Length: 186
Ligand SMILES: [Ca+2]
Ligand SMILES: [Ca+2]
Image (cartoon, rainbow, N blue to C red; front, top):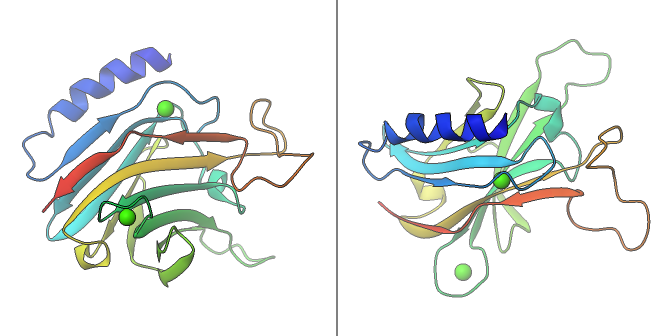
């Protein structure tokens, strides 16, 4: 099933190649969790920087709930390995007892993702259950950078991605996925 999805995506993504300054990175079927990336894309649309990821399988908003469940874009603006910017997307549950709307939020960080500089930088939307798009002001990141997408996931009931139970607490969930680095210049 995953392989069929991947070949369909190549066709779909190929049709968007005419959009200026937009590049797509494809990724293998290589992580057992629901956030296994098949593609990630960075580009400019209507003066906004648009970040997009697509996964092999559908997932619920709540898959991004908890400290280790997230989608992240890493940005390296210079030649040293430190990440100058990170954009983190997480699920923010409604207050307890509330039937209020659910929310997916993105935050911008600097200094290897350790220091938040914006807690609601733009709009997050999902058109399909296996993808997510975030738009934000380009000035929050910069004009020229290398980027990659990253996902981290774990869940009590998930057979392949259970929470870590022994030894030192790891930084990320038991299922992670990275795309390769790509270069962007606006
Ligand atoms: Ca993958
Ligand atoms: Ca750097």
